[in-house]
Length: 405
Image (cartoon, rainbow, N blue to C red; front, side, top):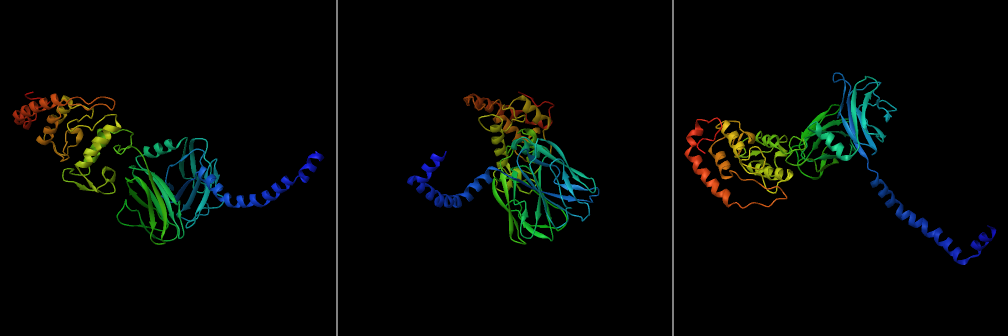
């Protein structure tokens, strides 16, 4: 060991190496360390959320409730309260308990790593009211859990220098509820492009802002009072044709479009109907109806758009569709599932013509070859003549609507 030490000290190359390492390595470390730490920070995502507690509601409640997070990913929970109480401490056993009471106008941050997956209780220690924390295994399960209640919900706290949290990730086409509170005073806040006018966020109370984030991208929540912002990041959610968030695109979704009004005339978009505006032109009309038929068919494994006349959306226009139309002939308040293919809200000859033109036609599955249309066109022509002859019979509403076929 002594010999090796002597060789190390007496070696000129090794002396030079020691000098170089003593000078260069600290410089390299100084230059690269911030970048290395940035990479580490990116590799460890943080679920940054806010929680508002209202002690007298009349029995107390939390906003939002429930909170849904992913297991194993650190959480920072920014907590504030509305009413001042001497015992406004919050706990989520076994993750944390606030060391000091939560008071109005201030934010208490609790940082913890939620695991294992399960259901946990958010508890107000002074008054005993509770909320729920769901810890899910994967990010996909988090997204699905948030959709199950029909909307996604988050809280946003407005200070004079910052918003808490500074970014919120939401799913496209899933209705959003934002619970907002000014920590010390009122704030004027814009949520463009989803809401045309700014909202007043009041101090020491919850202001609920609702809209459908129907565009993908990175948007800004702008506090105009103090010129501070938070990011609203809209990520892909359920299929655009799945309006009721049940992971299916079917008649139930399509019928919802008709609730916006007369599609043939077109209806201006409102915050409650923004997810129906599939082509993002600020008007809900038959173009959106056609877009839904195309997107839903693709989602359900077909190679081309659903046909007008296919009431059942099984890919074929047949007697089942005709019977449904006949049973609802001349009915008002009609929707797709009752035979309204024009979006006018009534079933009449226009809808019958759509069905006749596509009679006995089928759309192929994505793996099938499109059939020759010549025989379908011939049959449709024959059917149109037949329907014209029996039109007066339909005016009397035949029970199954097959009249003179």
